[in-house]
Length: 221
Image (cartoon, rainbow, N blue to C red; front, side, top):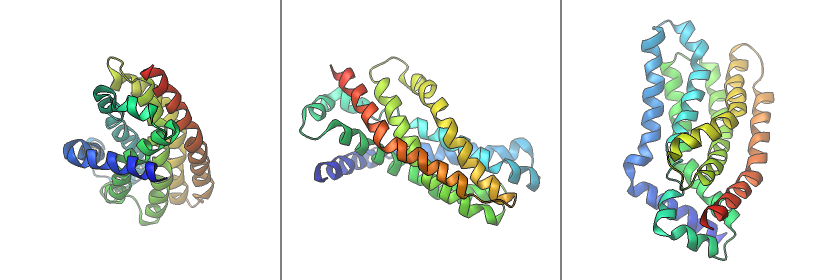
């Protein structure tokens, strides 16, 4: 656990040194959502109807921005080989990368989501469901994205390949995340959809680091 915490702290320090990269996902998220009122008009009912889907789609796309360089810097300077050969299990290394990615690119999206909900005229009763869905769903995006980043490591046009690989896998999280908010707005309960998001996260925590570790080992060899 000490090694795991050290890996997370290391990635966070590197991300903070590259402040522009860390802020890029949040800025993309905010600007992307802010464009929709200009496109569909200021009608409150229309904006409130599309708000959950718009916020979640832009969150998926924003998460992709930081994935390409998740392992690339370590791969280029040789640090990845040292991590593979270190006593720390490679699965923990991948899990640490996923956690650091979520703290840098996922957690800020959770914080920004309510402000964008106000911009999209989201009714007050939908904010709680939006926050819970984002909080449970965005870690799965980072975990799944880590697998895509590991599989495309060293490939040309890696960013495009990552998008092609992980966007289809993001669809269940998108569906249940938006449906949780929509259910509350229509008088239903968000709990079933949140449970599905929790199940996706529970499966992603053990499976995605394992798949990412296998892909990284293959890339280094």
